[in-house]
Length: 482
Image 1 (cartoon, rainbow, N blue to C red):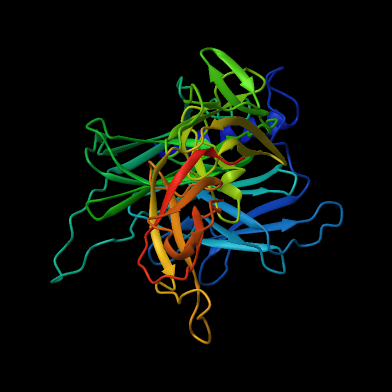
Image 2 (tube, rainbow, N blue to C red):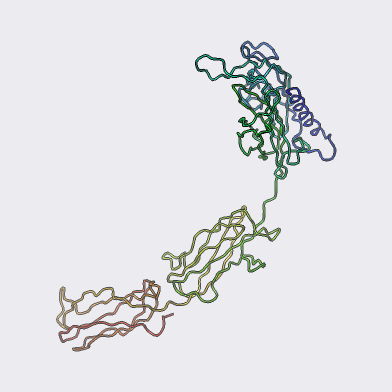
């Protein structure tokens, strides 16, 4: 089984070299190619540094990678090298080169063996091209992963084995001619056996290189001994992915090389507007109003975002900002939802005039790359109907007779009223007429006055020459002032 895995890993590496040299037919993928960096691999005793090709519990093996620059052959420091092995247990999946261009990880014996397999190293250069090297190694498989306790012998499973393959949705092997792409997602399929029989409900842990993402890192095997996760590309390149299983105190690991390709796509050009049936109007919003909006009434404002290339709704959620002229005043006279997020390209928000009269322009904006798109609609707002004129205050509420005023004795009073609409909001520019309950002794009041922006209006009462009590009355004029 492990010989088959090693052979399969080498076949994938051979496919890498073939595709990057232009072989494999017209369908060969240009990315990744062969890097001009020099990458070599050696295996040594982890303690003594003596060259060896066998790892054991007593003498673990160290995989040593050396990376040299093109042309000059100078050591390359700070580069990430990925490590994979089809036998044993790696202490790490990657390491960075030091000042001598060397990176290394330890390969422990693992708990399955004796067995032969392959260690593989990969470097992806700044251009996305690949340098690889591999070497055959053996393991005694005598590493114990017992759980301790009272000193009893832990259970063993000498026949534990795992194989890992990378396939696409149709079952074809992932390679440079069939890389993992957004339209061709990959599958990592691990098969776990014990003495040749499938192992059910064994937990398998997967690791992925930086060029790809896993749908999940850990999953359990089925009754057929199979654990599977999906693979999506993050960038173009190649790397080693590993599957590890721990079962009955023993560990088995398998690795496979994956190749990914990400094609840069042109940004989507959007349009902001609204649909009326199947007809899209660019830069135009739609409202639920069919006539002038009554004061205090709430309407719906609709916006749609479409792909300008297809004319279809843009299904990715987009935040849409809304405002209006009246809502943007220092003292807003309209209330509008500031933001709506599209669902299937569509969003609705609410708008309510709150003192705004005449017309108001409602605007929506979105960001499309470096551009800002806008759409708008003009709404008509009917003047508010006077609901009541409320007394607010009289300052002062007692005045002196005409000709008897002096310090602290005023002969005039300002009586404040507030004009409110049926919805309870103040009405500005409403003409209000005043009258007195009596005019004995020459008591007077100004005939009328318009309400201010707060709906307030002042009646000025001037004292007469005869002591009396009087009421100041206010009534709306025929129409609001314009």
